[in-house]
Amino acid sequence: MNTFKLFFALFAFMLATAPVAGLADDQTPMQGAGQWIDDVAMATTVRAVIVGDTGLKGFDINVIVHNANVQLSGYVNSQKDIDHAVDLTKSINGVRSVTNNLLIKQ
Image 1 (spheres, rainbow, N blue to C red):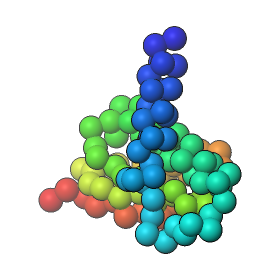
Image 2: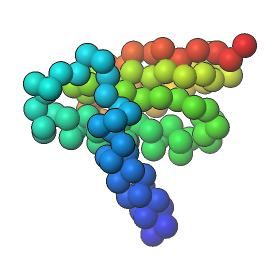
Image 3: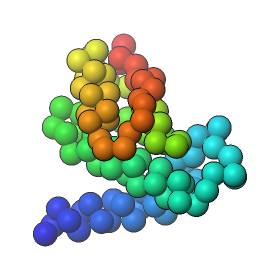
């Protein structure tokens, strides 16, 4: 039950902050409300899966979704971490494509 409460709290937080922090530059006001809600939900799901993964938990990975196309950015320790984050994201139902902008920490 605590996991459900945590996920719900995370979802509510992401839903509240997405209009400010989660929009890509190429998103236009013409995007329908339904698609926008779907994108916010997908971004929240991707973030939750990444944060919940023990191998990626400590990394600051940013997620932007536009029309079910996911962009990942941030820093990780290795190419293995990049591949794992991309694979996890691709495994999420509804993801059309993944743009990988993750970088390896120097």
